[in-house]
Length: 245
Ligand SMILES: Nc1ncnc2c1ncn2[C@@H]1O[C@H](COP(=O)(O)OP(=O)(O)OP(=O)(O)O)[C@@H](O)[C@H]1O
Ligand SMILES: Nc1ccn([C@@H]2O[C@H](COP(=O)(O)O)[C@@H](O)[C@H]2O)c(=O)n1
Ligand SMILES: [Mg+2]
Image (cartoon, rainbow, N blue to C red; front, side):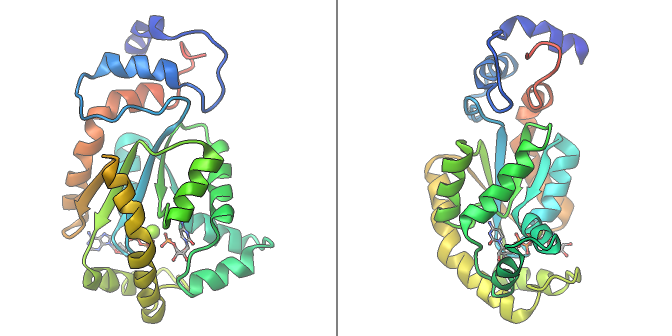
């Protein structure tokens, strides 16, 4: 591994860089490791971002844990950040709680700020952003605030009946895991999430995954999306301390 990193050191420029500003040199290393044209090109000046979309109970969090284990991403769950904010007793807490109880979407500014803080406080450069964007408003707020686009977008496609069954069996004490809130969440998902899914589909970034089957069966559909990226993910995110400064 050390030799492999050293062997590409000549590809890096020595201009001053910031945390999320390694794109130019990253692009060169990318070209070194792969010539497969369907592999997405990392955005210049950005970390490697994967958005993870899907209805409530489609298995986003479960698959994120598998992706983290296999490919070393940092998992940022928008829902978990919002629940953490409630638990912290912050000023926004009660508004967030009632929004989640009603199955509605928290104002984008709040969610994006939490995501931004989480990304900036993490040394990793590859993120799975789970349950985000939930709406076009979420998507635009992220682009404007973070100044980055996702490299990959996963969409776990699951029939409603299966999602309801999974959520009602989840048993994690979530205030929104009840039949009334689930119905509302499914309505909101139908209304607000499809425009986001269509947006990324049109840009060729969307990977639609049939989310019916065992956890391992579904992960075997996810693995090939990241497998061709393993070198770039391993060596360039985080940017190595040997040659990337
Ligand atoms: N393939 C699967 N088959 C059966 N159960 C599953 C599968 N994947 C996940 N589950 C279970 O379904 C429940 C919901 O999964 P998970 O929490 O990963 O969904 P989610 O998409 O993150 O939902 P939410 O949007 O509500 O956070 C969990 O109890 C999980 O263990
Ligand atoms: N971008 C988001 C993500 C989540 N929420 C709210 O949190 C609830 C739980 O989210 P999960 O991803 O853990 O299912 C969700 O129903 C929303 O109320 C949000 O507002 N915006
Ligand atoms: Mg989840």
